[in-house]
Length: 114
Image 1 (cartoon, helix red, strand yellow):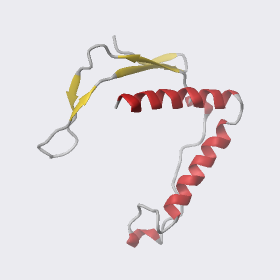
Image 2: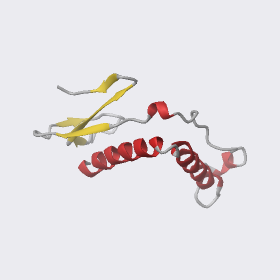
Image 3: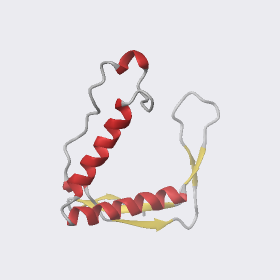
Image 4: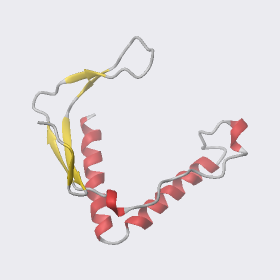
């Protein structure tokens, strides 16, 4: 989990650099095309066989550099735990908070944990 948070923060930082170089849209479009290629291939798709013939492609929001952010990862000193119930499964998994990612979007703080 800790590695996932670090990876996400790194990706967010990397995306910011790409946007500054004017290549962001091309990178996102290439990723979207690769996702459509995977789903369009009967050997790699997750689409069930009965629905595969109607598949015309994944739908994406328009690409916008307005959603590229710089984020700061602050490691948690306490590593609190919490349970996340997302089904009727009686074995609710326990998750550890390894850190917090703080960022602003359009000049507004979007996540901050005090």
